[in-house]
Amino acid sequence: MTFRNGLDSLLRPEDSVVVLIDHQPYQLTNVNSHEPQMVVNNAAALAKAAKAFRVPTILTSVIAERGGYIFPQITDVFPGQEVIDRTFINTWEDSKVVDAVKATGRKQLIIAGLWTEICVAMPVIQALGEGWDVTVVTDASGAVSTEAHNVAIQRMISAGANVMTWLAVAAEWQRDWARTEHAAELTDVLLQHAAGSGIAFLWEQQLLNTPVPAAKG
Image (tube, rainbow, N blue to C red; front, side, top):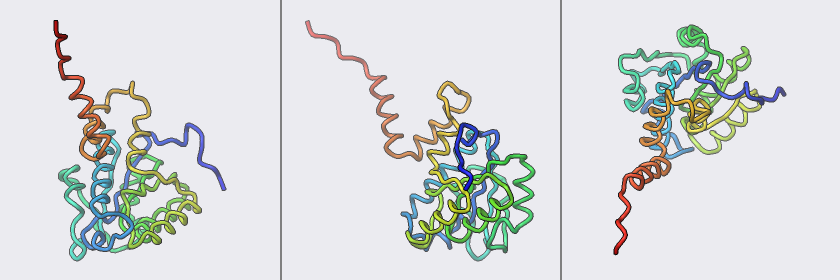
């Protein structure tokens, strides 16, 4: 196995491209590996983080006419962007998606989708075999059971995939708080989607803006 380590193995926004796969109503109805609302939250957070860091993001669905449209929490992040609708279960067999990814010129391929064991695992394993550097965002994905999700993650790791959560991806893109060009946009994503961390930040701002009571006497 080739280990993925060293500074060059960390994600860089200028080298990243995100593919969000099949975040659709039909798939969500049988997600049992995570709480469904968390999958929606995390997928939307990943989409917003990608937009904040100017990372190209490809949206794709499978037979949307029957399975439903991509969640508006995601498509609203990219108004007017085409969603590539497929018949292939394996996204990486659809030339329109692959061509869109290749057109970005990026090599760090970041994938999340529903379901982990099928619509994520297939393209990840194929892309790895073709030499792509692939990261799977596990908490923006979901499967029909916890077992299905975990087995799929193990399978993809064995094939050479890197696995992360959406917040880890965003932090890796930021890397240094001295890089201020996207920090405000990232903070906004954290406020909307990072639960306790976002609330803690608001509380901190409240305390910093609260006058110190005048001393008596």
